[in-house]
Image (tube, rainbow, N blue to C red; front, side):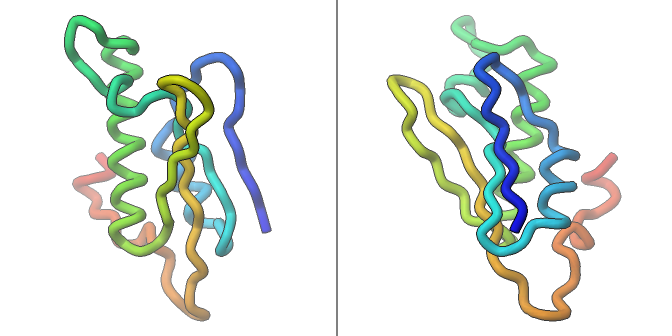
Length: 113
């Protein structure tokens, strides 16, 4: 079993492609922390925004891909409270049936572009 955790103390925005690479090789029970912070506030575009536009857009793509994987039944999404306004957002891989095709095969080329 492979466990990947992104636990750097400094703010670091994950990348959708890294999440997809993890998902392609993940075994049931593997965990991937795809964000640490307060997702709703970090995605905010208003005057109190926390991230610059490039970081916010990357986080939005990553969060959308995590939701996509959950909708496809590939992962469970959980959040763990770390402190006030700070959460760890984690994807936990679900076991795949023997011979099941890679979940990333369902990504349409238009989405990837």
